[in-house]
Image (cartoon, rainbow, N blue to C red; front, side):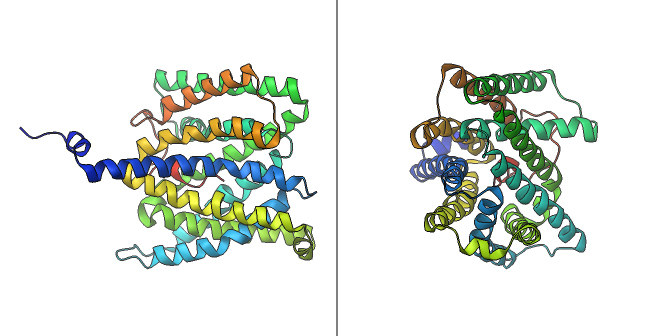
Length: 331
């Protein structure tokens, strides 16, 4: 009798090692994705704002994504891109990495990192809701329950932060909510394009578009010489953000997907919001209350119900078997 592939893999030392490496890459990638919020908070202490943080992050990560894009485009068997593909990449680059990141960093000026990450972690619920309202999809009862649980958890954490930190949390949460919605639109629109050109190729091209949009925004509002006159620590923090919290998480997470599959890798993303609760308290002195911990647990439970393999009865976009929309760069 033939044993199932999973059972064979469990007894294969090489497969076990690959799974361990995959889980490590997924966990590290999730924490690094989230840590950009910590770095942004440190940069704000030097008197700069969200646009400065975004411009430095994009410009410093651009060479890495250009190299990645060239490498991916030269891989054998790559499908040539049409004008429609390039047009869609322009839209996705603005939505997914320019607007989403701008709203996110702007919101971080007003909310703690733990709340920011929880709101962004609702991306799968926004993608599902876009499918309902924009495409007339139907959602099973268990998905509605998961949605209700997720939003109840965020509401709990939001009210607690409002009580502890003041009304500015309301404005900041609205900005982060716009960031999450912008990125959800990116995910909903990118499915077919990912199938045609590949996820890493799309990320690289979209990041280049986003950098161009950020530079245009900056030139319209400010003297570019301002970026050359900032305190030295700001540049080091921006470089760390560009390499360790922008470029490396993309490659780590896709490496995890290759070893574990999209479903298992997605489960590890829960480490991001949890890590920020404690990193924010340790590095930034942000308060942790019992209500915040309970709310975080509730949100993660609801999102995990939606992100487990086969959970969504009506996905908005069809993603290839080796790719998952949750594994893209999260702004």
